[in-house]
View 1 (spheres, helix red, strand yellow):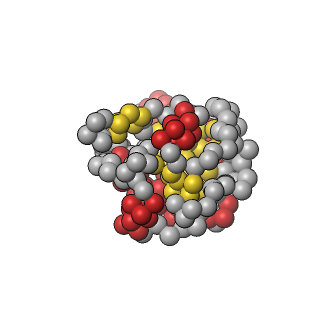
View 2: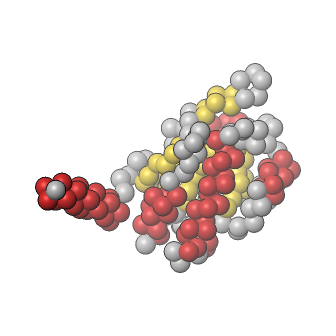
View 3: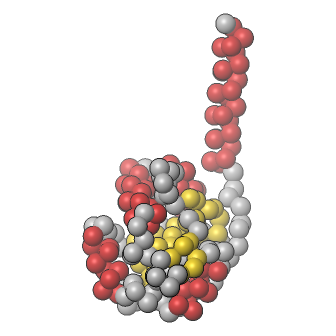
Length: 192
């Protein structure tokens, strides 16, 4: 009984130490993102103004991954607020992979359907070429079928204030949701 208790305590201690170490360690530099000619749906050129950003890709006709991820990103915003992080300290960039269909009015309607009113959550679109060029910087892979269905990788990216990709997170898929606590911890680390 004592051996089992000691073993359990050792495992718990190791797990605790690992999470503390990961949360305090520097995030890796996974690449750099150059300025983009994408436009925010309000018509303004976008800028993160030297703030860290979470970058996700979506398209409005996406049946599952994109809307579930949007819901989870709203939860992420609430979690950050609860931790004392203000919206002005970071950005969320949602980039459409289907600019042919996702016109400004379509994206604005999508944004309204999810009740997204935060000034730091920017929805971006560009030409097909601009979108592909921006996505390639993240090694974001996607393909549009003749029927208009887009198959895309399910990653989101944490970018620091200097435009370096510092972490990759999974979007929501199937029963697996966004790891909100881990995403919040990484954003907080980039803010500080």
